[in-house]
Image (cartoon, rainbow, N blue to C red):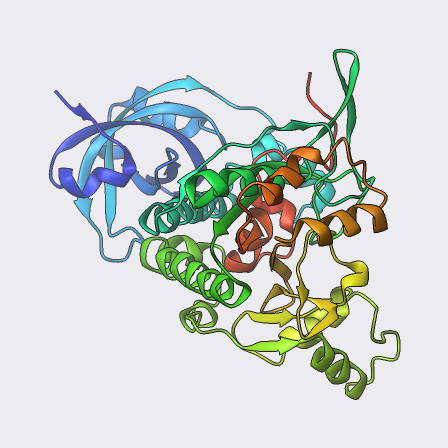
Length: 432
């Protein structure tokens, strides 16, 4: 009797008869032989059906199969060097579970809006499957890096009473009879946790109430936010570049087939190893002006074209450091030698993917933080608990946040960040 298997493990069953539950990814016929491209979520395999070697009812059942029909297929596994997986199945029998009719995503070109409206089905495509496998590996590598580096995972709240960044771009709701907001960042809570545990990180959903359909932006996305007590700006930068290097090299090691499936130029990832280049905000402005950008001057924040131009000068992620305090968050520590700029950095990914990490050393002086509260019109009552972190045992501390989806888009070489998430509610209707 044939044993059940999955496509990923067929190498363990060469010469044996197995049963695999799967879907028909594609089908073609060559006279008295039919070729089934089968998938089961773990991988792909070709099933070969020879008319003279199977009962007539099996042959007829195979002929009836359509794209995305589901079935149990029985067959003998054999090595096939010409196959991408190195294996093939000689089909001896099938049990049809469901015949699909008029599957909407056919092997023709479809527009992005159409595919996003059918995201629940588009996930089944080989490229989309590969993206989600790579995403899962990135998540695994992130957790491994922080676990092995002495960080403790702490989960901040998703409903918060205030903004982490002091902005108004928040989703408002009611928490019984009080105002509440979907979290913009877990950072402030991570600072509190760092004062208890030393090195901490969070990994959870964050939200931006900004309507956007650019290739880089999402309204709901996942953030990884480490905070480190007794850590200055320079030490934080070293952690960041070691972190990104570890994640990229883990994907190269464990997902090479998936990178090839998404068409990634792997050579562009092989060089992603610490240390990374650095450029100050001052030098970045001069660089852009020298390149002919007349739309930016000192004191302006960078847009996508500016970040892309800077990134194109390097083959690794690049840090842009020491931004003006005027447009950065209230909690960032000023440079003691030049207080109009802050001890911060944005890590810009190569190839036009923009900022993937933003981080800074945090203000640890309670008097200076109180000044910032006043400058940014922040409620002393709402942020009293945050001041307590400076009032009771303040220490130098730093942290950063990495956007998962933009990082996945960069590593995969995708055109659109929405391809990195299973169900992007930012583009099409919410399901009931």
